[in-house]
Length: 313
Image (tube, rainbow, N blue to C red; front, side, top):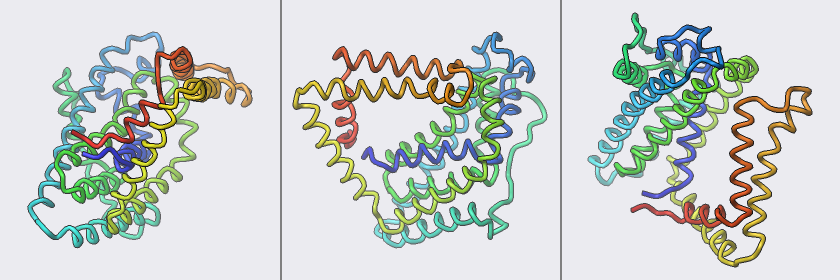
C-alpha cells in the first residue's frame, strides 16, 4: 500500500462532496433527524452534545462501510480481469473525465437523476443512526454520486484491495469529519453555512475539476510518478531533519505559531470578534503544537519525512 497523493485526492473529494449544493444545505436537517433533537436544541451552545456526536459517529460509520465495501468490490472486479490494465485505465479514466465535465457543464441529464433515501421516522438509538448511514451511502444525490464514482474508479484502477480500502476510507473521512464538526459546533456551522451559500456553485465546479484531474491521471497511469515525487520529498526532508540544526526545530514551530495567529488576526481585520469557539480551539491546538515543537518534544520534519517515505506493510 503506497501512501501517495491519491489518498489526499480521495480525502479532498470527500470534503467537496460535503460542500456540494445538495448536501451542505441539508446538514441541519440530517443532524436533527439523526440526533432526534429539535433545531433550536441544536442551536443552544449550552446543550449537551454527547448523544448527538455519538449518533453522528455511527451515521458516519454506516455510510463509510457502504463506501469501503463498494471500493472493495470495484477493486476485486478489476483484479479478476487480469492483464487488461491499460484498457481498464483508459475506459475508467474516460468515464471519470465525463463525470467531472458533467458536474461543471451539466450536459448529460441522466447522470443527475437523484436516488436518495426518504425516511419516514427518526432512527432509534445508535443502531438506527448506523442504518441511516447505510441508507445514505447506498444512494444519495448526483452531487455525491459522480465524485464517489471517480474515487471508486480510482480504487478499481489500483487493482489492490488494501489500497482500495484506503482510498474509500480517506473519502469517507473527508465526508464524515465535517459532519462531526457540524454536530459539535452547530451554531457556528449555521453562520458559516450562510456565508458559504454563495460559494456553493464554485465548490461544485471545483469537484468537477478534481474529477477531470483524477480521470486524466487514471487514463495515463501517472499515479506512480506522483508517488516517486513524494518519495523524493521524503528523502529531502529526512536529510534536512537529520542535520541537527536549530532550523529544524524552530522553522516548523514558527509556521505553527503563524498558523495559530491567522484566524483571530483575519477576523479582527474583517471587523469581527477575534475568537469564535472553533477558531479558539484551532488556534489553541496550533499554539500547543508550536510550543511542543520549539521545546524539542515534537519533530514535525521527521514525522513528515517518514509519512512521505512510507510504502506500506
